[in-house]
Length: 113
Image 1: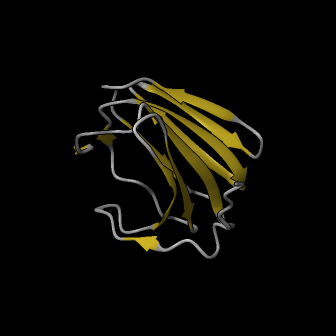
Image 2: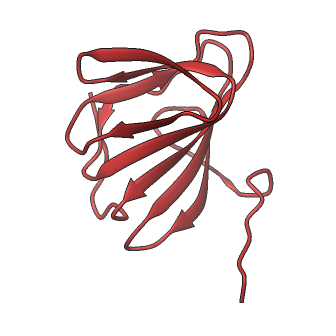
């Protein structure tokens, strides 16, 4: 059976980041989350216990991983190894929307800095 999820219909989850976060898929092997940062919103700097990839769906944003910073836009994939502080910011005037892929599925909490 094919399972589908429309991100617009997915339930918004409350997080310490205070932004639009929607869980699309969750298993022991993979977690997929869609995040939309409105203009001037950002994630708080944090450390995840698993490897993470960000795939930019729309807009332009800034990604910080460790001591490095890069501007990213639609159709860009960014790797963020576990244990490295990171965050994403929207410094523009349009929504910045991206998928977060965590592997394996996390079994412990993200640590905010």
